[in-house]
Image 1 (tube, rainbow over the protein chains, first blue to last red):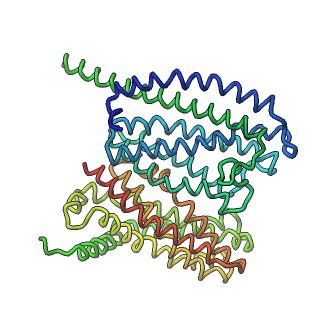
Image 2 (image 1 turned 45 degrees about the horizontal axis):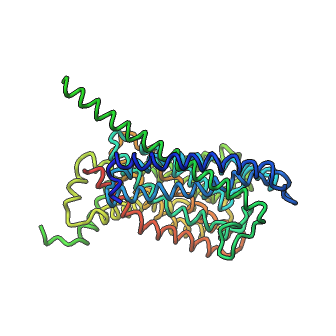
Image 3 (image 1 turned 30 degrees about the vertical axis):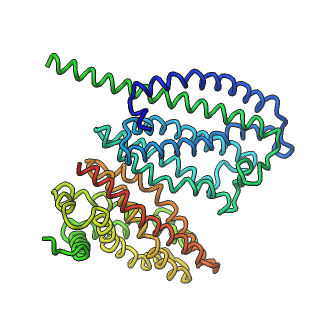
Length: 241
Length: 227
């Protein structure tokens, strides 16, 4: 893993991945949206409002996935002091917070026609809201401390503590039998969702994953460049000092 | 020096922190005062109607205990950090994990326990049904250690910050939610004559998980600040 400790090597790798990820996004997002909005049939019970699912479910998956990326980066930062890990965590957090907010907002908009209310305090909704707060807390620590290294490692500790929330989100629908429905795609006995609905869902999921990879790598490159710039500025100041 | 046993340092650290919390300038008395006044505000804000108060009683007491705990947490490590005694402690035979555990235990005994002891009185002011009293005290006793332990993580992370209090709130409150849900659930179950044990067991589980995780996380955060 320390092969990528060299930022220059990482940037080279990122530049190789980025065109592919952009290509996948350019392909999957329009096609996924076409399937989701135009081509797929309306649900026999939910009508057209089922189409919210094609945004809601992939966003929720990405909210969890991004937290796992952030937590893994935090672990690498604390245990192995991997030089790029802090940058990776910092880059992932706002993306994850956005996906979480998107999942919460689309969920509320979907809940109004289906459940008759924008919000209920059931286990899934509450634990995802906590996930959102954890992202905010992580970013707040980065903001609050002047020294990047200290701030990053303090934020990493919080990110690792917050990992206990992930299994709670995953299993909340089994533990509390309230409004939010249980898993219907990722389950041991195969998906229970109809194939007509599963297709566009998976296209959208791939599109969002590609979007994450693109923005994540962009943000990491940006951060690396920022630090290069800071070092250059310091050396200029010192040279003329 | 090497003859000093780990357990004697551990207990004397707890005793010292309790004494400091109750001496002049300590947070324990003020926290208790905050708890009393904040709970009193609810009947004034919502109206003195007995049935409404009875409905919100358990939740109010739990929420205010949570806030009272939060209020006293920002100085948990900060005073020792500022005057350098935390550096001294770091060189004692005690590991940093045990030091933060001792300080969290002392915080619970000095600051939270008085709040729990006085809570039945406030529950009476809020007209809580008689069925709930035993469970209120029990759920607070079982649940609030999680508040001190999880809170110690936030206190350790913000120890070097001048205005750490607000950030501490943002970090810690989300992690308090499970304790609040299960703790209030137990009291409500007792009042509605259903089985409070599942809620109580979950409250205890949260406390035990926090007892395991928080010393590791707090010690890591303190190490970061002492570097």
